[in-house]
Length: 505
Image (cartoon, rainbow, N blue to C red):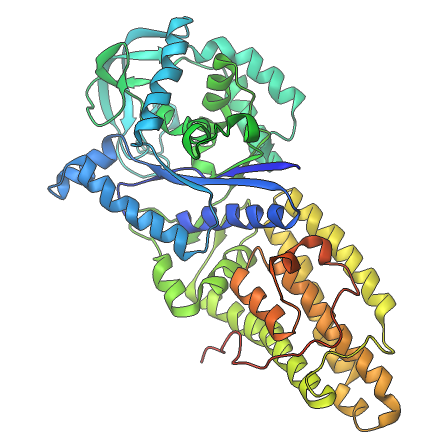
């Protein structure tokens, strides 16, 4: 059986989760669900990054210890994963004792082989993103991601010999042109390396909230090294079995573009130094923008995902995230845009089609799905075959929006089929019985296939669609091998219900 290992970045807990966290988690869940539908052995990892200055400062402002603060915040991130219906197999915390021990073991090995050394250093440091910046990389003297003025820090740190791996990284990139996706991000990552790599600090002397350096208890591990290692450490203790041989290397690390350099340069170098295989792919998505700016807790322009889901439903939220903004690019979101797509596409095009189909089968066939009869099955069979190829290829390449567009084109084809065939007219003459049966079967079958393909995006509503069509009898019905024309069950009983997506007024 093929395995599929997918990760989100672990989310920083200096504040409550926002829609950007939900966005990446849902993207990973879509891919995890899709690969389970393919019958693969899937492991989906998410979690929280809990050490470092921002968490310590946030705790101090609240009059709490860092431990008390992160314990409280983690509950909100767990709640978010549950709320968006994420099917993650494990939720890692970087304060887990098992993770801390594994991090210490990892860096001890690098120290023992001479890849870590001590030196004095000074630099401009943004505490919000835990990063040192050369002056040339600042925008008007401020952090390019957070818009805050970095502080000058001088201390003696331990450094990882990143420069030692520059040529090995270039060789790897040249041999794996799809390592970073989309291709524009590949070029960006490779250019980081081409410009020359300096050794990087992997410890902090002035910070106490972190994992102690095993050979020097006065310093703690740099939070980004601590965080990156979660992708490996989690597999070692997520279950009684060591899952590392089973799932590593990861198929995909998903992340936003602001952490590209850490994952595309430092992470593979650390893996090379320690003898691990590199992940197959990194997929870098863009920012969700509100008011023309990246959503950020520092900027204060965040959208509360819990409020949106409570008001409009989880599946509608999941759909909108990947329908409105092409995954991999920046895109503007708004409540106005959400409501427009909800009414036009979910309520009118999909929800109404399900209601009409069930109503017509109830009225004209006594609620029983008819035999295929005389219809246009050959055309629909060809359309579904092409749809399966296109949607599968899109998801294999993490084109979540492209896949959704292909499916939605078919939804619209089914709606046009209703209008063109006019079952209400066919029902007026018994001579048209087999033609009427054919049309209604095609609508049931088309919606059944739509439900299977849409399931990773809208897991609850698609199961309900199958139930209403009389086609959902177990988890096996969700397997993608069933998304083949002609597998609907004639004789099944359809079930009417309230609108799947009540129209917003």
